[in-house]
Length: 345
Image (cartoon, rainbow, N blue to C red; front, side, top):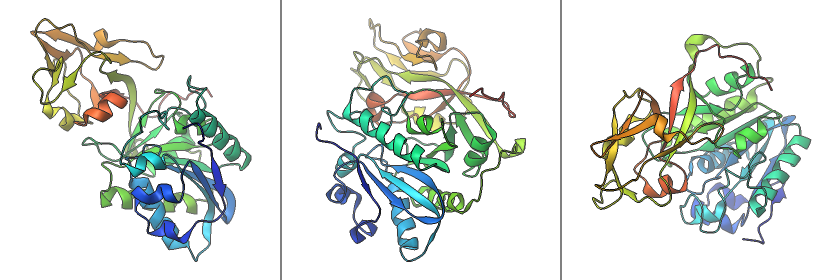
C-alpha cells in the first residue's frame, strides 16, 4: 500500500457516531489522527484498531464521541484510527501490510510506509505535549482485563492500576505503540478481553473517562495490595517451517485444546503443551527481551510430548491459528515483586 499516508483532522463526520466498523474505511481510508480540543490543553492520546480485528477501542470511541458531541471535553483528546482497511474484513492485518503495532519508533522495521507514518504520529504528539497515552487492544483467548507498561515508574503504575490490579511489564516485542510513547509520557496498553464484549467496552470507556478528568498523574507509589505485577520473560512462537493445529492429527505439532484455559494461571513444570509427530524434529522457539532464542531452556520433549521445564504463567494463549502464526503462541510470565526495582530511564 505505497499510497498510504497519515491524515489529520480537527472535527469528525457525523456518520462516525453510528457507522459499522466494517465501513469505517469509507470515512478514514488510512491512518487518521482526530484532534479534539478540551478544557485542559495537554491531550490524552488514544490509539485504536492497530489490529483490525480488535474492535473494542472503536466502540469505546463511538460512545465517547456520542456523549461529548455537544459537551466540552474535560481534556483535549487525540485519537488514532489505525488499520481501518484490515477492520473492513475483520483481520488483524491484510496481506502485504506490516503489523501496525510493530512499526513504531524503536523497531528494526524502519523502511516501511507504516513505520514512516507512526514516526509522524510520534513527532506530532510530542509537539502537542501529551498528558498520557492509552492503546486499546483485544485478545482472542480467555484472559482477564489487564494493563501493560514498559517502564517501572510510579506514574506508569498509577495509570495502569486505574484499569485494574493486574499489570504486565514487558520490553518485547519492539516497535509497539506504548513503548514509543513511554519515552515522553506515561503510557499503557489496555487488554480488554475478547472483541465486541460489552464488559470490555464499558470497562475501557470508564477508564478513558477517568483519565481525561485527571488533573495530573501522581508520582506517588501505589499500595502493594492494589497491584499484581508480572514480567514477560519469553515470547513463544512456532517456527515458520513447522505446521501446527489443535485438530489436525497430521500437523507437525498437535496442541492441546485445553491450553487456552491456562492464561494467567501458575502452571507447573512438566505441563504438556502438545504432541510432536513421530520422527519429527519440530519444537517451539522462545525469545527473551534481547531477542535471544531460549526455547530449549523452557521446553523439553519427552515421549513426543512438549513440556514446560519450570513453572510459568502464560498469557494470550489462543485457539486462533491465524493469530498464532501472525503473532505468537503465547507469552510466558513470572511474578515481579512490588515495589519493583526502579528502571533507569
